[in-house]
Length: 85
Image (cartoon, rainbow, N blue to C red; front, side, top):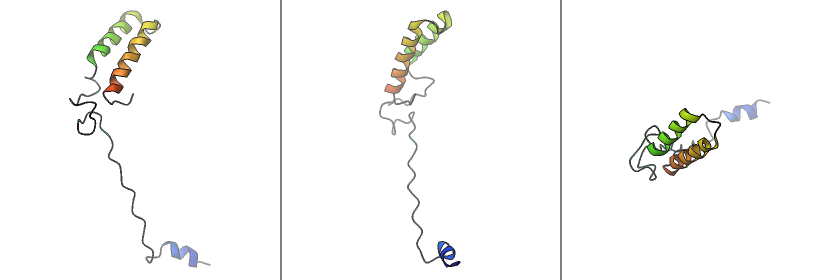
């Protein structure tokens, strides 16, 4: 009855090797992300679109249609540098 259960822990079988862990991609590392050769962090990337977006949002709020357009431009810029947004 316990033969099958004991065979699970038996040292006769070779355990399967652990799968290789993929190195997590760091978008700020130029060696891992050729789209960001300067190694910019998200807070420093795309300053033009970020400042335009922030200024418009502070002055007009998020209800206006242009805010969404500026946000989309900033997201596209960030993705262009390899950030997953």
